Length: 159
Length: 159
Length: 159
Image (tube, rainbow over all chains, first blue to last red; front, top):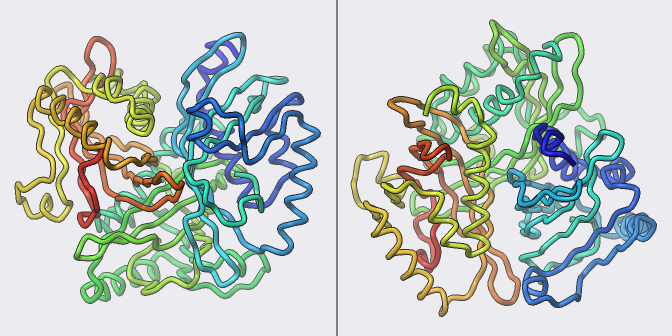
């Protein structure tokens, strides 16, 4: 991603807006399209990450594993019916080299159950490597640093 | 709204920022100015909307009805003193035709009471038709899709 | 700040994104760099502010006082270990004169404890005077209007 490419910051903003919106709308095929052909997706407690501990809650090192994982989540979701709502803060460019942008954005996720009761589910920070693929920004590496690791039913949707 | 008009995305962002800020500041006349001369304002539980059920919590099909409704809310508010705080995610352009843009943005609303205690009030998604009127972006149709429908004192302010 | 300078709205967005991110990452030296050489930092309950009452929760009228305060907070933090997560809404330009921009943005802060349990901590509104110093946007006057004034351990980090 050249400096010029990220000159189109709205495309970056749209990528993050779509990321949250597509999970919340349960459009997981469109959500997967936001990732590059070669991609990773990790959910790691913030504390582990800061201490350099590898242990993650979700560990998808290839796109095939991520696709499998999403399929499994959708299956599990049939028994844990809820809806998500992501609020994602303004993305912040923290690095840019070798055609990859390192971008961070804070997030909060709420869940609502079938009675329409809404609860805070989790907060954290996205720390993502973003590339331009065919002229479109995509997530190469999505790292979800989780503040909240005592979450119930953690794996029912991606974060 | 032409593609060029929405090329000024900051005007779109400002419209949503003003929308939340003016409710939170209880500046409802200025808030009404964000709507087009011909406008609608609906609050519908997300589940009803997805199932195609018409039942809404608030149903203002003309500007006059919306103005009446706001007047009634302000009266009711004298007996339910609180302040609101809206956080609205990045607006996302999901359609654009016939001079109208279809824009979605997630939101969360907190309420604080007179003791300064703050609670999560509701989350949801705005799904709005936006037009340019006299060179200014305005809400033609504001649809508030509500995740939270077990909200106490629902009608004390607009969402 | 000329109209042209604020024409670069992304720089304004980045300033607010960095503000929250640097507190959350506990990078307080970098956070202090977001303030102008001459600056103020106040935390005031919203209600007091609207009534014209001067009583604030935090009152830093010079940069030296702010730096001292941050040092004291870091010391206090050793005994109240937690992490913060700021979500800041889209900044909104509400005034611009004499080279200073008046900008507002809503915020919510969550805190997570060592067990990874996350709680809503506070909501409010930033109401800031922003200047360009050496070509970089900086906070001249940061006013944190707090909806939540019954917060526990209020002073453990800046808001």
